[in-house]
Length: 296
Length: 296
Image 1 (cartoon, chains in turn blue, orange):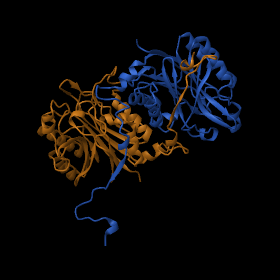
Image 2 (cartoon, chains in turn red, brown; image 1 turned 30 degrees about the vertical axis):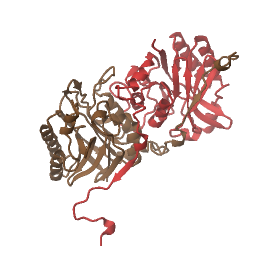
Image 3 (cartoon, one colour; image 1 turned 90 degrees about the vertical axis):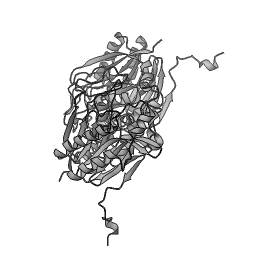
Image 4 (cartoon, helix red, strand yellow; image 1 turned 45 degrees about the vertical axis):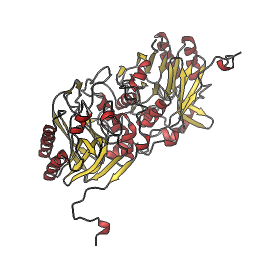
């Protein structure tokens, strides 16, 4: 009997400053996923609030509690009606603090909160970083979460994989940056490339829900993608600009096969933690030359 | 004044059992690179010996000393004549042991030996794994080395980047494996995808020299690639089957820019080593349900 789960990622355009509209959008995409009999849906980073805040007051005005906030309550209703799980990016209020969080919601409501560990650019003005990486056993398998810039820290996905995560939900807001190009010929942006590598290096499924559109001159890259545990996309990359729901049936028994790449290899057990030490080898010096420090 | 270096990777076909022919091939490609005024050349994994050994006797017969062996001596001559540096994959003999090694050679000869940390499949029969990751300051910048399957352990490139490496030389023998496909529409194999991600995550240049051809029914994937510090290829991917020298002029001042991605971010300094801890969140349970273990 193989373990299979239908995964979806929703790529759409939240709007900064329009919390009510963002709630409606999140629920609308969740209903699309429910109609497609999806088991796990991923929505973008900061789907509740939009991304490019102009002030602390604006960031504060759209913050919500992870357990009682409106978008979590609304998504819980959809999850309950459809026996679905959902990860949504939340501008999370926690007392006086705010976090850039991913909330895992199920038919019974809030399950887990992941607070982004690595804050990008102005996020450092609006949010406090988190301090740990939750994993949760859902009926189909073990799920972890990272958010956007976290992908550039392979330590995060590695930590989740070592803790048994089979599926990594990735709410993201990939942005145009200094790079020479934004998408390759296949339509992947660099975030998707990094997600493919992360899947291949760890034998995990990566479900990346990006947003589209422009906020205050910041362009988002779309290119949402669901990556199989062999590192190749099973759905997407989506377009750079259009709203879309990507859906893929993922075989989670493939995770063990992907890790156990040959009869003699296992991606997690082959690690050499005691040997990840660099040694600086002195540069070559012509015969007869002496180090400057000891020259007469 | 910008620091620039011309990097080349040679993709060709060594032949198992033909040490003399492999030495000639290595020198021939080194001369091509020298004629192109290359500063750093990378040759494939086990370029001296070929890859698919049939027996321990065959593996032993083609092993060479890292300092006095024939291929190192021959490449030293080319490096000396052209003021070039070269990394070659060597079946290294070290007393009774053998290692799957990458040897950094300069105009004065042997500079550093990196012994592959993560052995793939039958390599575990022929080689002992190494125990550290050397970095060397060459005139143009700091260089580190990894080999093939090492790329699936992001700990290795991360360790080198944290030790200041700007260029990672990657002798490799990427093989067809369990994956659903071998190359994407752009011609990258999964090894190239992982190299692109590694470059992007660490702000390093990745110079991957793969081999082509078939040995004892093992097909190699070509697709050699030189990746810039922004994660996108600057040369390649090469074809899956043809022999070719890829050459690119690489700006090493771009490394600092790639790491310092925004005025408020740095890929190496933004790490959160104290927070790479997974916590298992209990799965949701309906109200009134009790854990099985305590049920009457």
